[in-house]
Amino acid sequence: MNWNQLTTIEQLDIIDQESKTLPVLLFKHSTRCSISDAALGRFERKWKDENSSLIKPYYLDLIAHRDISNAIALRYDVMHESPQALVILNGKCIFSQTHMSISVDEILDVISA
Image (cartoon, rainbow, N blue to C red; front, side, top):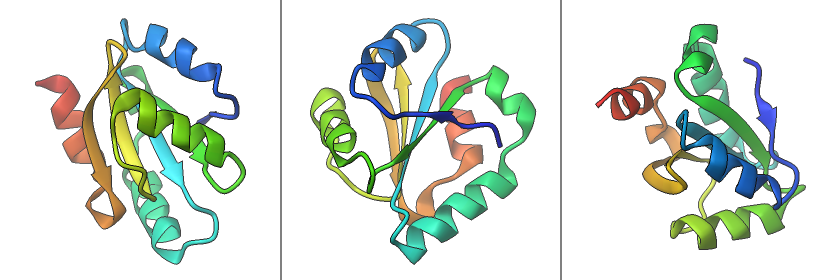
């Protein structure tokens, strides 16, 4: 899977702009958590390359960038959790899943509705 790396808070402004033309996926991953590892692995196995034409995927290592995770929680009015997948559309979070409920199929259903 070809993730776009989320490494600066300033990228959130770019993501908000991008989400006006294409939904954006933010995947928050804890590199210290086995549940997060399992959820990420399951997600990546289910992902198809062509999905990137439907939604732009960003990966956040929240251990390295907790400040960005905190900024995401404030900006999109979501509680911080990990792992967590958020769908951003028109600068707003329209869908959120956590832990083992993170599902490629459900995310694709949300953006196609």
